[in-house]
Length: 109
Image: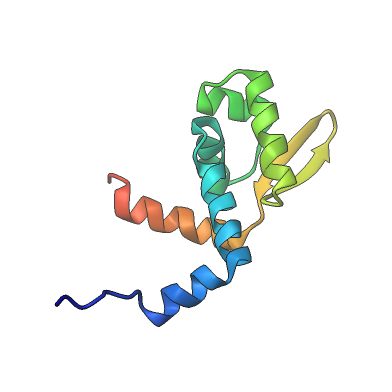
């Protein structure tokens, strides 16, 4: 006879709180696109305008703008207009901490 394995209390509670699980999946889906991930990593360091992000990420302007819109709608960015340029900044502190953790674990120095 084998004993049935169970998840720990914390994991079980998390699964039962479906809203929290869905929110986490939504966050990870934002990381799943290469350009979005590059944008998030770049904005974790400092603010940039679209033109700067295009150069840094080596993306196409239309694609970078589209990904910025998705990240903005997800509530992760702040925008500030300065003349003709709009500057973007990462406003979600939890995402900053997550990116910092990922850099510590997987980044090369």
